[in-house]
Length: 98
Image 1 (cartoon, rainbow, N blue to C red):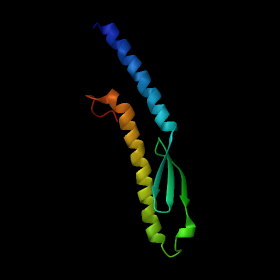
Image 2 (image 1 turned 90 degrees about the vertical axis):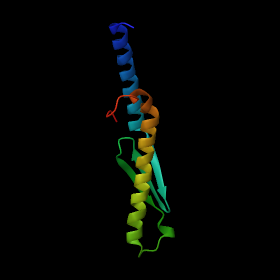
Image 3 (image 1 turned 60 degrees about the vertical axis):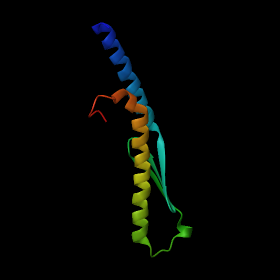
Image 4 (image 1 turned 45 degrees about the vertical axis):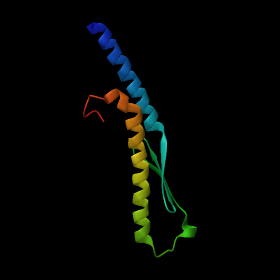
C-alpha cells in the first residue's frame, strides 16, 4: 500500500471517529439507583437529576447523597462503555487516545 492510500485511509478513519464521537457527545445516558435517576450527556455533563421523593424519608439526606453519586457514576460508566464500544475499533493498537 502506498503512502497516499495510507494517508487517505487514515483521514477517512479520522472523520469516522469524529462523527462517532459527536454522536456519543450528543446522546443522553441514564443512570439509576434506588429512587434517583440521573441523565448525563456523552460529554459527561449532568443534564438532569430526578428524585422520587414519595419513597424517601426526609431524614435520609446522607443516604440520598450516596445514591445520587451511584446513579451519576452509573450514567458515566455507560458513556465510557459506549465510547469504548464505538471508538475502540479505531484506537486498537494506539494507546492513549481515549
